[in-house]
Structure formats: structure tokens, C-alpha cells
Image (cartoon, rainbow, N blue to C red; front, top):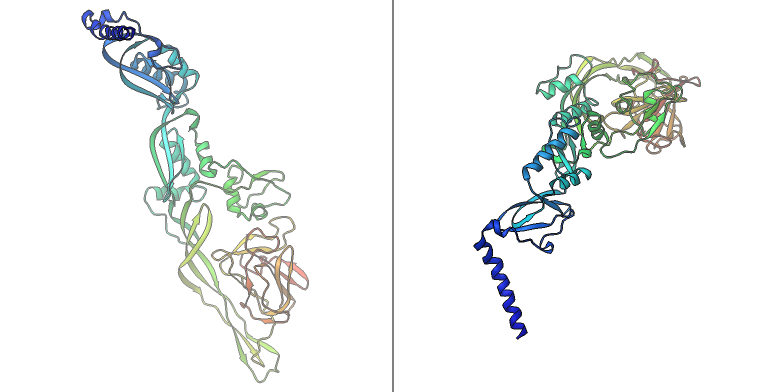
Length: 502
């Protein structure tokens, strides 16, 4: 009997809840309060005050998945966000607007409940916890594997200015302006280089988005720093020593070129020939950019056409003796190369065309035998192809030689600079595998850092241009090159001082 009475009571209560509001009307129904436990629990205390006969829209504000509270007036929230932008962000972030934070969202629902108006408390909660984002430009970096990095900037124009500034590390600003307009750079009329193309090997996509204010880069310097080093905050520095040159600093630090040292210290260095003050601190960490800037260049060089040596037998000359009957003179040619540079580093080149400008005169030697004697001519050729001097005589303290690199084949052949006899073929901890050739006319030449010991034996006779080994970086070397100098009567000389066309 008791159970029957409980059921009847519940049914009567249900009828009253459903029917009574319809009989009395919505205004009269609103006098009934709603128990707090029927409302969703929010971070800010907000009781549900009444229940309506008909459902209506309500706006719930969530932060990180938790209900902050129900906003009574959506337009008031929009007005609040505009006011926050005007008073707190407009000065530093012009032409933007404020929106809710990344993990903050508003839902629109139908409800019969009417909640207490706590809009001001909700707005204060947003302000105290900085739960805002700003309209900005998102920059995505992607490759064939997808997006691998993203940054936020205040505008597309800011990013474009920064990337143009970064590109000028590797290309002349006037050439960059021409190429950006789709024009061609002026053709070469003399020796030198011109840029004919510039690309970014990755994809860069910009879109309008929203981000937290502290994530948005608003000045060119911060965007440029990201383009140079990405998220890498590690920097290595070197203190300039007495007599250091720009090339010498690079040679002593990871084998960087003088141009690379200038690029990463362009606030201090404007020329690779600049005199460095002792004690100045220079960055020696090269760019670790999230993108690769590829520049295609045309370079015209004057290159020698090495005169050949022709040996003629002469029965009137005693065997073993030689007579030079015609002096050899090197010719020259204009060589046009197409070069590929990535982030300011030359990675390859192809000979496009070549025009002889001066024909060589062959040297003629009359000998009493077909055996080529090991006596030098007194003139020297470059010991490598496509020579580039990366560290001149004295480019750092105690450097009494020149470091020569093959610009297009870093581990290419090393050639005898003149005829002679192998005097030493050995190794030491400074210059690694090295060879000394005695030219039997007072001259000797030195070739260091070979990648392995030369196959030649002491006493072997070599002709000018014979291969004596390959370029390497054995010993104390930070990059592949040939350590080369000339001696005469026991005194060491700079090869660029009257011996080679450096």
C-alpha cells in the first residue's frame, strides 16, 4: 500500500510540472525556482534561477573543456572583446582583432533554464587569465612529407620583408628586386657573376588565423632570426685575435668561407676584406634555417690554357742533357659556368661555354733521350682544377701557405705544379699526408692534406700536370683543400706573389 501511494505522488508531481505552467502561462511559471543540482556545474558559481515554459538559446563558455559560465548577452561578449583589443592590444597589434583563446569556445544550446547574469565575472575571468587570441597571419613551411613548421606574424607584409632581407644574404638586393618582378638581370659583359634565378626549395603558405599574443612575431628582426636559425638558440662565438682576417676566422672555425662569416655577422662586417679589430666577438654558427634559399648564378672566369711541353730527341745532345729551344707561354680562355648555391654555399657548377682568348705557345725541350728529366721549368701551374683560394698567406697567425679548393670537386685531383722529382712522401699531424717535389732548379713545392698517402715513391720523376694524389682534409684541416707553398733555395714563398695568377 505504501508503494502505491509513492507512485501516485510522483505521478501527481509530474502532472503539476507539465500542466501547471500551461494553465498559468510562462510569466507565472517563472516563479518556480530550479534546484541547483539540475544545472551543469561551472567554474564560476552561477545558479539557475527559473524554468520557462518554452526553450530559448543560451551560450555556454568553456575553457579547456570546463564550463566557465553561461553568457547572458552574446552581444555584450562581442563588445567586451572589442574593448579588450582597443585598450590592451591595438597599439602593439594594429589592424587586428581579439577573439577567444585557443582552448576557449562558446556553444549555443536550447534550454528551459534561466541563469543568473554573471557576465561581468565571466569577462573578468577571461581578462585575468589572458584567454584571448589575436587575428594574425599563420606561415606554414612544408615539403613533400607535409607541414614541418609554423610561425605566426602580424602581417604578410612583415614576413615578406623579412624573407627578402634574409635572401639578400645570398643575392644582390638589386638583382633580387629584378627577379621578384620577373625581369632578367643584366647579361655579363666582363668577368664576374650574376644571379639568374632564386627559389625556396620548400613550400611557404600564408593564411589568416588566430594565435595567442605572445606567439605572434611583430617585428622584422624576430622573423628574420627565425628564418636564419629556426628554433635553434645555440650560438658559438669566436674572439678575434691579432692579425686575424675574415677568411682566417672562417678557416679556424668549421672551415667557413669569408662570405659565410660576413653573412652571419653582417651587422659588423660589410666586406670580406674588412680589417677586424682584435678582441671583437664574432658569431661562427652558420645559418640553421628551416628553409633552403637556392640561387642560380652565371659566372664568367678567365682561365689559363696550360701550355704543353713537347720533347724532341736530338742526337747532337748528350743523353741525359736537355736544351729548351722554345719557351712555353700559357694561353687563356673565357669560361662561363652555371653555378648552384644553397644558403650561400656553392654546391656545384657546370661549364656552359668557353671561348679561347689567347692561344698558348708550347714549350719545346730537346733531349738526348725519350726519358723526361725531372728538371722544372721555373714556372708553375695551379695544383688543382677550378682553383679557389680559401685562406691566403697570413689569413691567420702563422699561416705561411695558401689553402686551395677545387670549387666544383672538393676531393678532386692534385697535380704537380712543375716537373721534378718526389723528395718526400710522408705524414704529420698538422698537414696530414703531404708530398714535396724537388724541381732540381732551386725550387721545391709542398702539397698538404691529401686524402690518402700518394702512390708515388721518393725518387719518382713527375711531369708538370701529373696527378700526384687527391684533395683531402687529413691532419689539422676543417675542410677539404690543398695546403700549398713554394720554396726557393730553402726559403718559403707565397705562391700568390708572382708565381700563380691568384
